[in-house]
Amino acid sequence: MSAGLKILVVDDHKIFRIGMVSTLRSIPYVRHIFEAENGLKAMELITAHPVDIIFMDVRMPVMNGMETTAAVKKSFPEIKIIALTMFDDQEFISEMFHNGASGYLLKNTDADEIRDAIDTVMTNENYFSRDISESMLTGLLEKQKAPRLSDGTFVTTEREKQVLRLICRGLNTRQIGEELGISPRTVDGHRSRLLYKTNSRNTAELVNYAIRNLLK
Image (tube, rainbow, N blue to C red; front, side, top):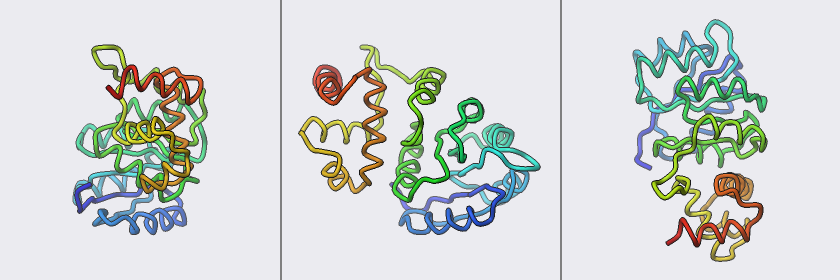
């Protein structure tokens, strides 16, 4: 990841913004962090100070996350938006993705996942919370129509490929986390998404699929 990312945190709760800013400051390649309490303030801020990523609360007064996401993507299509919510609410999150969001996180996430989400969206891929329910992931992926290659296999993110290769080498969750420098929960999140994408019921089927389709 190249140095110098500029990030905006948009949330009407000041305490949450303070915590989020503190977490972002611990990431070496984040250079500038801005804050806004609602969508209207966010639009004013990015007009004066362009950013790379916006962490966007879904429910806010004045101008909510759905409206703000649509407005941002219309005027600044290059900005990546990661939706933030307290709830596993498919209706709101689906609308955020429809309006141009690239990622989705629950607000009770940790620093490892925030960093993982940043890395993913900056490679033009979508990020789904590792704590997302199976039913919601199914609905979102169907609406997103997860891209396939010409041979019918699903497109996987670079991080998913790294996790998959280590799974195929027989490493467990803790070992994979240590190898990649991510938390066990983040590893489990990648494993769950891989199981869904490949229609595998367990790790053995996932390895089988990988050998046949992805790791040639």
